[in-house]
Length: 521
Image (cartoon, rainbow, N blue to C red; front, side, top):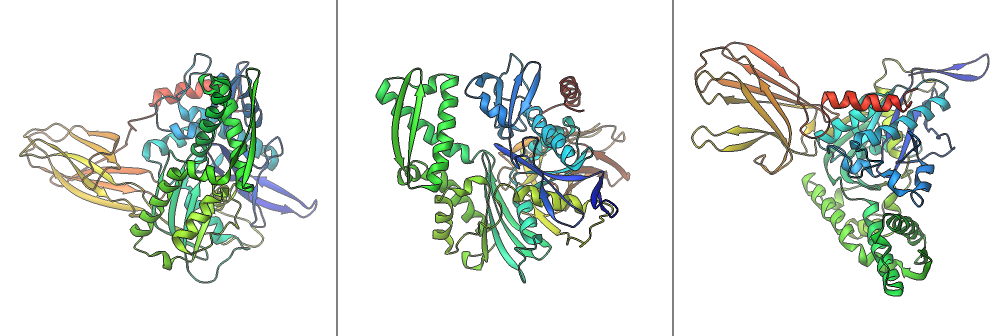
């Protein structure tokens, strides 16, 4: 990005910008760093800083954002929601107009709107971005995010973790500049995902010590608890369950979300639901809401304590707890964290914008040159991986498949490891390397994320011939593998085809669909 002041007109000319995008489960945002070094959230075409991650399919095209949300209580069968939770799966769980889409295709529509709207505000085409993902996203989900960017016409220069992005924004922001080194726990509870990281922040130096999370836990799970309660109240009074119809489910979802927001500001709130000509008026207290969702909060509490332990720290060694994500506005969240830590959580950053801001700052570090008046202090980032990374191997004596951890979870990134394996029979023509992410310390129980085959081994190789497998795990969470035959000097680079998600042909087909909808103009 080149952003320069035009002194003759006192305007800003922007050429080839790179933006930061928080691609959320329920809401998304885009930001960039201007020529003064200030980070700005870019409003969408409706003038809002936050765009709902909802997609309406109608009239041969798609509509993203606020209008798609409005359509939920009219034509819910035409609206896709919460696709981020399904990233890495072959198809989105909902069939729309008889058509199935991969989740990354749904997310690409959201990215496409963000890209186009940002271009309008900046006065030029936007083609480059840094996109954030939950720290707990595995390789298939990260690859799916890259695919979504490609469909949307974006060159995704990096995929970075959301808690890390929040820490970047916190550390670099001039208003919240801290003196000396502080150890910060980033508690990120969004609409559909949860992450927690322990981070050392020293000015522009960001070092992640440990991270964990749950890519299927977020504010919508609290909404579902309230929706079930409203549904039960309606059933008691009218012997009808709105949840038994798709339209009723959306009415419940809408009322539950609004009720949750009310209970975040008040100790009790009323709800009024009309459905099929019948109505209920009822009231619920925050205390009752806290009780019915205590199991969800406990899941985050368990994860927080686990990360504290894995960072080899005690609560007393934390300097600050940073709240990120709209769902942290529920009073139960800071109350629980204060009980655990004795620290008043810090809500000074914008929970909805801070991740996009951090992504924008990181994006600016990728530029070959940055022409800023004040010279923004760009961060130095050290992150960790959230999952074990292993290879499945065959025991020669037993023939059993066993896992060998190559890079353990919470290893500082970038990381590399070389491990020696051996061929298992004479004249073996190829070596198969199966890569697993997650699972236990033996590498078992995880998700197979790739199966790489090294063909054309030299003839007449004896059983037991050494094969060195080298892993490199980049800061953006992407994985590179190389195999070396020490006896011959042969080296073979390997590309992982992700086990879940789209093949190259499928990506091309989905790109054709995106282009046909006219969304890459």
